[in-house]
Image (tube, rainbow, N blue to C red; front, side, top):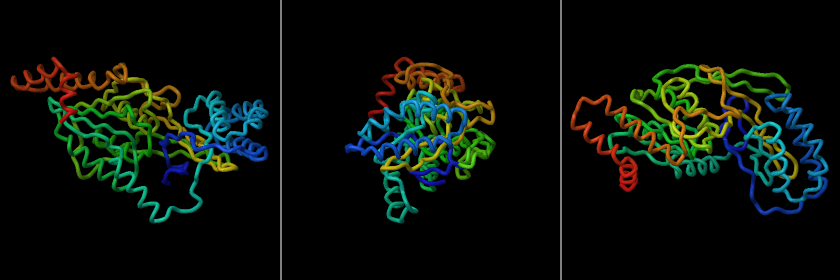
Length: 351
């Protein structure tokens, strides 16, 4: 699986949330605008759903004069992206100006720089702690890849492995790569099993089906207690993959908002004049429900606002813990927290 920039279409579950560049724009010559326009049309031949790809091409041709009149690269990229998304309703499709795509294999120096960047963000594990009542809390902001990430994920899960219930927060998680999502799913289910299938369209028009499996970590015992996953409208891509897999396996309850609805995998295609486009070339469906979340998002079990999701899940976790304890002292302690859950969360955050 290749790194950010170009993703292997046959193996990657989408998992990268790409944003248009905001670098300072220079005037784009007419010939360059024409070349970008033609390149976008050609790239749409690889879109996962051929009929939708044709509809996008029809819209692009209808608005050709508009595109050729835009000399600002950022405005052109944004206009094309908006038009393509309006037809496809696919939030992953994205035209990017001033993009820098790798032209050769990454050097040892660039790989080291990537590793340092990942480590500096704790491999996406923004916060790992225990809340009062022995409730584990993991705030996961992204899904990165590699052996260091896996080791870090196992370390994070070890810290909360003896909690009475576990809250995993992906409200600010826009995606990434699938390996850790599959590892965490295996940690929660305790099973290596088929969890999803990805259907990928190749440039020659042929299709390939790839099976994706949960991965049970060998160095830590699987988690057995109640699990709650927090979501928001910003939860996207790999974060949705993880949430949907855990929910459809019946292993966790989703608390919060309907997620962003980005369920297609894809590839970055270079265009002219420093432009590129992310084209979804694959679609994913759950091996359990035989459906995906593209366009629809992951539906929460308990609907609430993103801001209220943590408090709501915390109360549910405490009630589940109380129902399982035989200690009157523990029940009284839980009742004290339930009387002011927001205060308990605030005090925990200040530790």
